[in-house]
Amino acid sequence: MEQKTRDNSKDNLSDKIYVETNQFYYDRPFVLESEAVLDHLEITYETYGKLNSDRSNAILICHALTGDAHVAGYHRGEDKPGWWDGMVGPGKAFDTNKYFVICSNVIGSCRGSIGPSSINPKTGREYGLEFPVVTIKDMVRAQKILIDHLKIDRIKCVAGGSMGGMQALQWAVSYPQMIDSCIPIATTYRHSAQQIAFDEVGRQAIMADPNWNNGEYYGKEIPARGLAVARMIGHITYMSDKSMEKKFGRNLRKKEYGYHFKQEFEVENYLQYRGSSFIHRFDANSYLYLTKAMDYFDLQRGKPLAEAFSHIKNVKFLVIAFSSDWLYPPYQSKEIVKALKMNGLTVTYCEISSDYGHDAFLIEFNEESKLIKHFLEKV
Image (cartoon, rainbow, N blue to C red; front, side, top):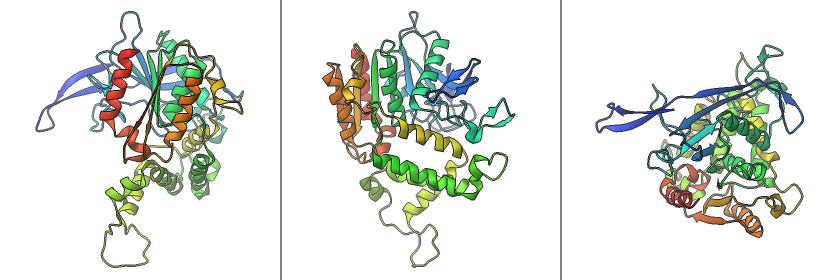
């Protein structure tokens, strides 16, 4: 739901879109890919725009690792908009004057949907590591249940960046008959050894924190230091050498040298800030579960990648990569494009020149918007 109001808090008046968060409770058993069973699902989601009369204008946005359902607009009492507000809204790339946009929080997360920090009805306490392993395919199957609940039979487009791009690709593979188009951005069809390695260092940082306590820290001191380090490692991979040089260089925060091992360089201060702010909004166990889900993701599964897409007939694809993204480098997007074209599918590939690294998909709104607007008009 959305409501347009006039915000008078700034000197020059601007329109704000206020949105509400919805909760969907699915009270049936949900069998995961691991064959473990959750006896119910809880899914947090938000919607923007209006569903048209024939229910054919729905777009599903999938979020990245630490994202959530709040993709755009404002929550009342908050000054910070949704994580992709520059892309979703009236007149924007995903134009809510035309489309009904849905974004749900993935299962396994801690941002409203069921995950390790949720209460296990069998024990009356948080699941912790008793929560079963979750995969990208499980996340997409849960989203499918939500879409069915909303009585939507066909989706005009599924889009997302990073882990969201993995979900978009999984949608195309799992439910090609339901979607018209797919926009995977800055993503891959499977993690490389290097990508798995970065995730593992982050996980080890969390598990090395004494407060992690084998995942049993709820109601106690959280593994703040380990989670902060994991986030710092992540942010290094999200930026590029050039963007870090432009933003920080070798700037020192003080003149004299010393061995205090505090934040002497500006880049150190930035990483410390990112790490310390992250611990207040994300659960350490969810970080473990979601990074492992990304590492498990593999559309190829030992076969030629083209076979993964061989059953897809009428889905159109727009694959977007960024020149300086070294976490999900363009060559991985090109491999997806090649496999899709080998199946005779309609594919557009665009590599955007940017210095922002992997974070570019959250920053380069102008270039992304031009591509996506044009693409959706042709779907």
